Length: 266
Image (cartoon, rainbow, N blue to C red; front, side):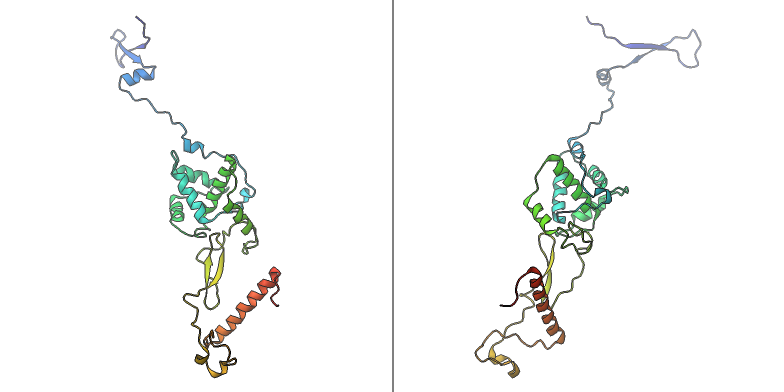
């Protein structure tokens, strides 16, 4: 029969005399013995798969000055954050701590900032948020660490946001200075339009702003200068501002074509 060792220590009750009986205390030196007696052993915390996935030793140019060029939209970063938080073992608080390491001044990213950013919608909605920049840097480092190639959309973003269109700070990367709800000055009938790359351009609103064209008989006499053109006349604007604005639009179009090297004259 095998002999089981137990450490027994004889202790004398406190305040007792020297010849008083002693009691035996068994020191449990095995986790199995503690479990057999119904004593729960302390659990050892082991790193989860998600926490290991956040460890990255990658350097991006400009990160010490928080000036890494961003080549993704706000919707793209939101999609990556949602997909990452759905992975097994990934904790939202741990992700925010790792993302906050992007900032060298010890800035923290609160949960309400993340929820506010995830609740927005649009290519440039939330572009001034800290989580947008920190999230992009986090996933860009992860892409480089895992050796994944750039997507076609990423390469298109680099071609577009190379510093030419970022007129506010004249630096490469997605515009992180102009808020998405900024007002834009447009000509009559024109509205601002945001494309999938986050660029803001103007477009003529034919549905709501285009005037109905008139026939030759419907226009005033001073307007009837060519009897052979019977249709397609624009109505009188009766507005000096509208007339001058239409001239300005034509001048802008000709000036843009001249910059691009196109000849505007036959």
